Structure formats: structure tokens, C-alpha cells
Length: 251
Image (cartoon, rainbow, N blue to C red; front, side, top):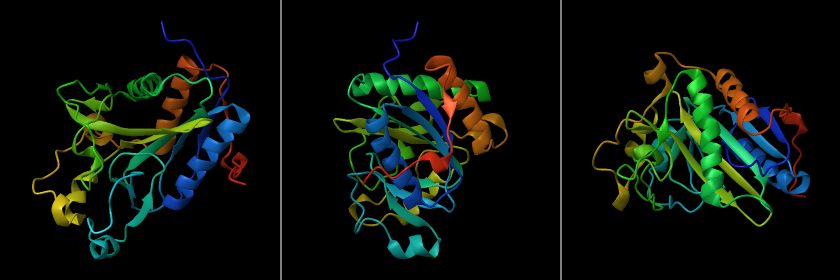
């Protein structure tokens, strides 16, 4: 039996590939919208060009080689959530925005969203589970990449991290988003790190949908599976919305 559903109505959104700044602005606007409307939105999106994102509190200045990043034609953006560096390229990003007034504690909310992700991935043909205590490691803010090791509750397949997630909330609403790896671009990140946090050893190879399925599903296929999971677990009447329906709630 699943825990009681504390959110009212869910909306489902698949967005066209956008820049890092546009993607983060949309997530921020959706979080503000959740506080105003009381609706929960599950989004799937991708990125119009390779983009390196840093967590909310992750140090970056002086720890990354700006010249190498520019030479590789990689964009850079700061996420409103925590966590460490992710290269968004051959991956699919999800986000969940919801009102926080009556929301469950962070850990319970994180687990509920994990159930959606697990169910959707199972529909694609991939079995994942939360990282075991022996696999977990506190991800202190540093220049090291997100997919180096799984944090508490992050989803792994055959020991490799497949989904990296982070959540941030204020008194009114919450935002959780994360990356579902389609192929491995994360192993290239140590090449951009300099200074005291330089990664002397190679990053463990993460799990990817391509390696697990023998093919690379696109964002639309992933969205279809995740939306089915939302309807199964949270709201059978969840309705789709268009990207144009998102309004800037920042005033």
C-alpha cells in the first residue's frame, strides 16, 4: 500500500530542448506556480546544448578550467537545488514542483518521487533501487562530479548510479529535479577540474539506459513511462499541460 496522497492535482509537462538558463528559469517558475495554484507538476525535459550545471552551494570559481569548458563548447548554469556538477548532454532531466504547505518531510517526499522514477524505469525495462548504506556517501559541496558516488536514496542499477537527484524547498513550495543518464558523459568531468579538488583518479562508470537496454530511449519515451507512473501511483486524473502554460511567477 502506498502512503496517502498529500498533493491535490498533478500536471504533466514535456518541454522542448532549451538552454540551461531557460530550463532553470522554467523550474523556478513552476515552483512559484505550485505555491500559487496548489498543483504538482512532473516535467521531463532536455538541453539544447551540452551544459555543465553546478549545485546551489557548490564551489566552482577557481576549481574548473574555464578555457577548457569554453573550448569544448559547453554552457554553464547554476541550479537552484543542491548537489554537485552534472554534464547535461546525453541524459533526460525530470523535475517535480509541488506546494509545500502540507507536504510530507523531505525524506518522505524524496522516497515518493523515487517510487515514480522506479516505476517508470521499470516500464522501460530497467530495474533500479535506492543506494544501499554501504554505497551511500555524503555529497559535501566540492568540485567533484555528482555521478562519482550515489548519495542517500539515489537510484542505482548493478551498483552504478543511474539517477542523480536533489531537492530544495521554502515555506511555500518545493522543487526536486535530477538527471537520468542515457549515455555516459559524466566520466569526462574530471578533465575540467583544477586546483585542490582535482580528481586524481577516474570517476567510476555510472549506469546508463544505453548500457542497460542496449539502446538509447529519447525524452518522449521516458516521459510516457514516467507519466504513466504518476497516474498509477499519485493521480489517475493527472492532465498534461503545454510549456506555454507556464507563466513567470516571479513578478
